[in-house]
Length: 130
Length: 298
Image 1 (cartoon, one colour):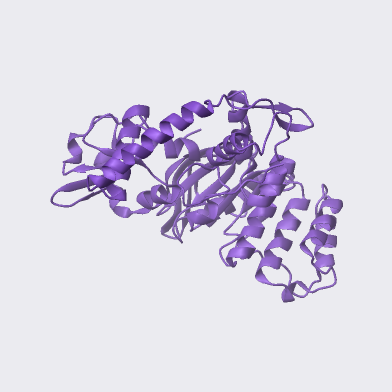
Image 2 (image 1 turned 30 degrees about the horizontal axis):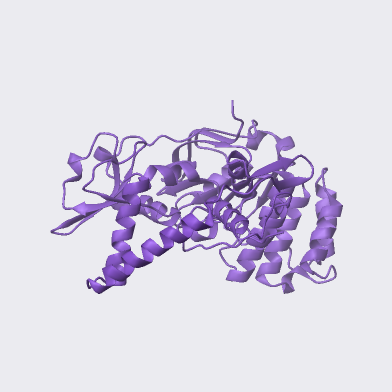
């Protein structure tokens, strides 16, 4: 069983934080198919949040096909998210590291680099409503 | 059709020459935890007292769980109310409060009351007057919950509590919502208290409803735009300015819009619930010419 945390300064909606923590736990092997997620009652007792928020997060996980509610029993993990294979991840990590090194030697500081990354990210994923 | 736990139409309450609440039209859906926010004196207590039937309207109508509060004693059993400063009887013992609750309420759930008192570690023999603020609030909440109400109204329940007691109180309240599906309306002048727990928000300012709706919908429809200086009058028709500030080079706006903002000149960032409420509380944001009647979500 995993335990949820809440970051009130992140600006990320509470239900989304719960969804992301399940994704993260799946990636790290802390959750596997067949594992039960905490009940709404348990999450509420720990975090003092609205139970509807927990239901919303679990509905989102069901919509993604990662979890399933079994009436009277709880919500269970059904499968792991389709992860990218380790070789691909390693290739992009290496490319990104090279890119960062060259940006740094061109005189860019961490803030410059982060601004460039965010702009590029937004362009690629049309984040939000920009 | 969605059932409304509180439905108000043109509701107003006047004390001598002052309107404590006016033109209040609302339809609060069931199963929500509603935050009623606004500065002190905005009309929050008046609205809650109209909903309990402690006050009668000067104008308009209010119905609660489909019934009229002031004329229906039967409704009292279905509504729990925790008044401001969570009043208890100082000279009575904790156990006497439960006995009184059982005697006054036909649907009293004594098992729930005893269990909560046990969980809270309250001594049944202790006089309520010697409880801490947090314990007193929890006792008042226990009395309201043991009625097993369909709707629970709480007037500033956490205002006088320290952060730990505040968190504990909200935790108890949310556990009850998870267990019984109770609809809740709680007022506060601090939105930070409510950010974790509310999924519906009503903002009252100067005795009027400024905005009401689902928290997720409110957050999705409000954005902060920042960019080169610009006259807000040149914005597309669907973008309503709630708050604006300008320097000689830059303009920062908080806008409400149902449509995505496509203008590449703007940097668009989401707003927090607190920013949103503060923008609506700001009297300068109440510019009638630029603010058509806000839709009150139903």
